[in-house]
Image (tube, rainbow, N blue to C red; front, side, top):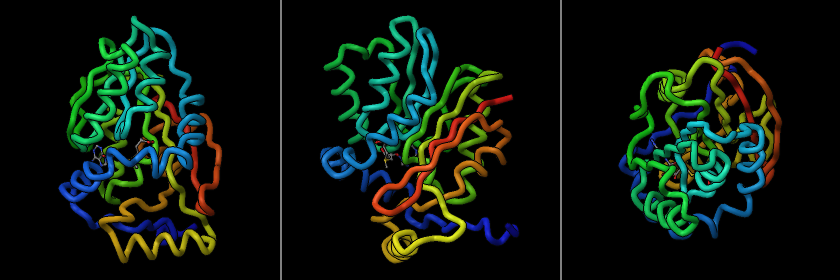
Length: 225
Ligand SMILES: C[S@@+](CC[C@H](N)C(=O)[O-])C[C@H]1O[C@@H](n2cnc3c(N)ncnc32)[C@H](O)[C@@H]1O
């Protein structure tokens, strides 16, 4: 493919708009999205294969389902850090983790993941599901650069995201149109998941495709060399 054909749409809504819309959505998010997204998120977690005692970061944790699974997987000797821009999502996740009794091994931050508040080389793995495609085009390499920075050598990055097809079908074209027309509501868009991870310096370990409402997605596992 030529360089031009790797183009992806820009995200034109502001971070303030993203925060406000996920704050509003937080109490309804599971009702609206969990049924369609859960299996793919779980496939990503399975590939990430968190182990007892590991330190793991989740970016854009939403309502906290993956945070809980990760906290259970790393056990009492491990640590899970989460960062999300929405205070509403933070509140829903915190309530879920407290109810499950795992809050002692979790630390949550409400903030923009364009800069991660974690030390260089301090994590075994980073996880992101349906979040990387919400960052504007120039920010994607910056966010992945931050993932690379906080991971130790050999650390894993698991990404579940909507992916752009070489020959987009009707649903993908409709979705892209909606994203251009209503950028505050259809704020994510398909991206070249595997390619952006490899461009950020990660080594590919595994990639699996999926479909959701006629759109395509990828579960990608990469490693810091
Ligand atoms: C589509 S939801 C996915 C939630 C969750 N990962 C899941 O799979 O259910 C995207 C999440 O990313 C968060 N988010 C959006 N922009 C962000 C940013 N710049 N920094 C951190 N979190 C962000 C939103 O608040 C929201 O919780």
